[in-house]
Image (cartoon, rainbow, N blue to C red):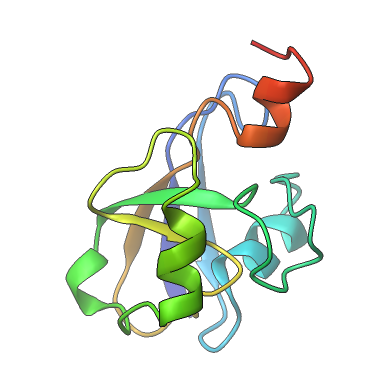
Length: 113
């Protein structure tokens, strides 16, 4: 198992959480399985940006994003150089520290800010 540290998010994970993640599963799957209701409007098909996360530690250990993910990330709210779509990133052996941005494009459109 690999440690996945989720930094506090005011709505989804107010106190943060440390998860023992199963390698081979995506970050999005792992979060959902551990009760963190990250948005995933496209059902994890890399067709939106609602599951956008910022990888604060362990980013360099990740497999590079494919072109489709890169194209989608360009539309993400709060994009940073170490942003990824959590539905596209598989947990490997390196521990990760992730931050779920305060908003997603869906939340901004719905006035949840």
